[in-house]
Image 1 (cartoon, rainbow, N blue to C red):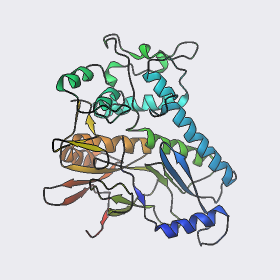
Image 2: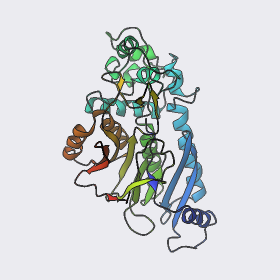
Image 3: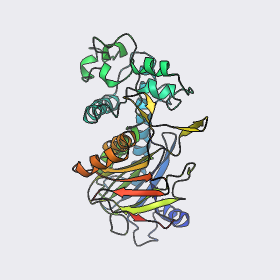
Image 4: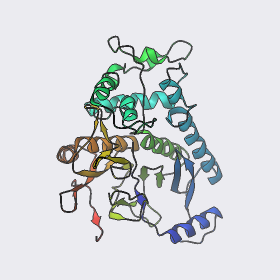
Length: 362
């Protein structure tokens, strides 16, 4: 459920010039082997920048293939596409799940277990009643929260999705329920992992056609190798000010991504929220309690071995809060992070040892 994206550190004019050069395959910069393709996906835009040296297929084929991959992901797991497999599953309709649907479910269950239920893609009914899912509800009563809490969550569902698929390839939602789960059918919401997962799928394709230096931006980031200047990819973290809806306009700081393949994701509570009776209700709902979180952590940027893990762990941090996130990031091998929080007087940052942030002047 990400609503904050990490922004490129390019001036608009410079980025436009680069895009024009690559569109016409002109060697108009010292880094002419780098190509940028872009398009629309998942309710927004995507950008893929990569080194075409050693590319096994034409650039046009890469563009068409990325578009096709993202359309397939939308048809599989988008909760906003009413004809997607996910939407039909959530309506109680038996479906024939594709490999994407099965893969993201299995990985999401692993994440659910690894985070002790903090990241729970089967808590869709909770997000819905607070108005942060696929419906327009908001401000449920305590009784409603208690009721929905009892009929949501991965703990009601079997882990082995393949075992629930019938011989003809059909998956009936009722067959996903454990024996003591009750009659309420499961509903899934992949917003906490889908964009990171999408980055991973696109990256796997790029590797398969000979790309090694890449940056995939689909609202979240996956990158590997070097940027056009031969350096690690440099990214910026948006300042988590309520109403800061324009990525890159207000930057808290910049950092270089460590060498090797990494997902980079920021989650925050400053773009999707509402205020009732003077109280702010954020889109980050704790699936263990059923209520939006209330703490000083404003945003969490996480670097992990892949995009889906980074996506999930950024959400994880936003649920568990500042001190627990510090402990998690400081003790997790292969995971780094930057936390921005409000100490009551100013925005402050905390970074794990492997995350070096160059803060911008306020």
